[in-house]
Image 1 (cartoon, helix red, strand yellow):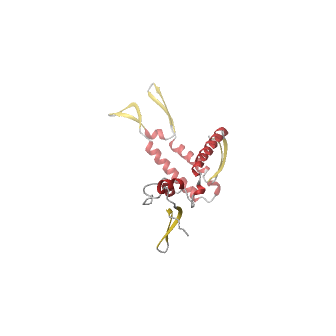
Image 2 (tube, helix red, strand yellow):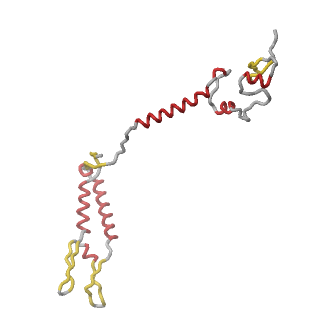
Image 3 (cartoon, helix red, strand yellow):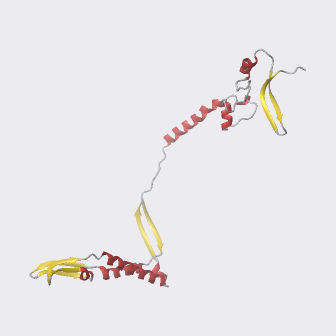
Length: 216
């Protein structure tokens, strides 16, 4: 994807140019060597070759073998000194033209592009709706409950008669009324009503129980 970046950077083009010129004048060097009748002839440009090229000496005689020492440490030291001097000059400059640079960058970058596949969307939506509809039969008969229930973990555990949440004693079950009467009562006449017991001033226990009907 092609793009153009027009930016404004606080830099010094003149300082960079000056660093390049100063570094080349101090460090840049080239040596050309060729055999001659009297030994080796070499042609050099720049002062660096004269500082680091040496002839091997054998006693009082100088041989034709030419070697050079490693100039890396001196080159790095020169770079650090030049950049230090340039930074001082740029910081003390009162002209904004020396510390401003405009540039235009043209390039390309990879951008992810997404394409919708509606077939997969329809299939996923259908499966989600099917899963929702498969849960609906579990709510059948909710209107016969005597109070409002939620889907909290405690309510669900009580619905499956978890032993930890099951009330103590007999006659407690989530079976329908007709099955409860056949199982616990038999042929005795009873009423399946809500019984409320008060414990103290604020605690009330409300339960469904079998009770013998009161005859008026």
